[in-house]
Length: 309
Image 1: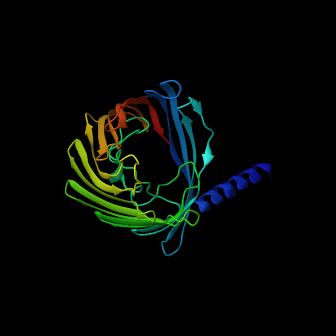
Image 2 (image 1 turned 90 degrees about the vertical axis):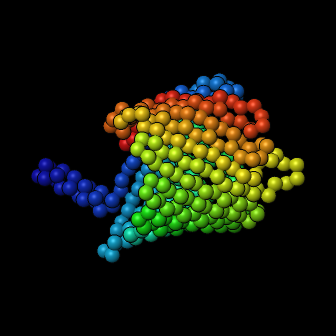
Image 3 (image 1 turned 180 degrees about the vertical axis):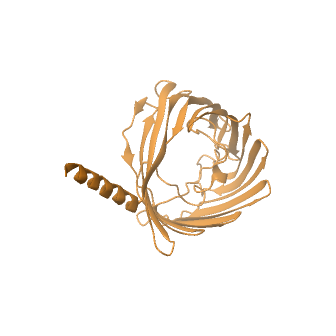
């Protein structure tokens, strides 16, 4: 009788889990990070634990409704301490064929695109082709509540388009953006534009190419930050590039450069390596430099292990 009760209870729990369609995914990384002229020590332990918790349900008509929260713990390398894990704000989604609608803690048209970020060297992906951009576009928040915004996207074949709107009732600085991408043969193009009520804007174009073991992106854009008189010059044209090269079946080299026309724009360049150990585990590291374009730069680098689960 007791054995029957245990088996029955297990079956009910398993059936409930299957009906709920809850899944878990994420990654961990840890290693050493170097930042020249860091507040404390230049070398610090760096780490991240990320767990995505996704729940979904599908109607008889094939419409999927889902929600995600993320549990994440990061380091604080400036003081060489570990932070506790926190849950972020929820994202809710409705998906039907190529159409997707996200509300809550969402990405915008820039943040949603791999083309915008390109190849990011380092265990922590500490820089990229976008280094010269200072405009604050809508981003998914991994450790906070995020913006209570809406993002809609549609993809069919090689074409994709997306747009977001983020109302700011408290600050009165609503913002919106729109982006589109198209892939053909070995090439891809991406364009996005965003602006806010503070009369700031960002326009970006990315051209990508992929040939055999080589992949690359050219990044160019223009931002208007509506700077006050006497403020450091950080707007105007922004530009960059990133490259990826597969040395072999398990090893890739990544490189990036990013800057802008403004005298105070950030200029950053780096090179990194990824070596696949199998089973979702890889060794990753990079080294580079970052600082004001017309000022002194600091060396930055890291090395460690990244594993998916």
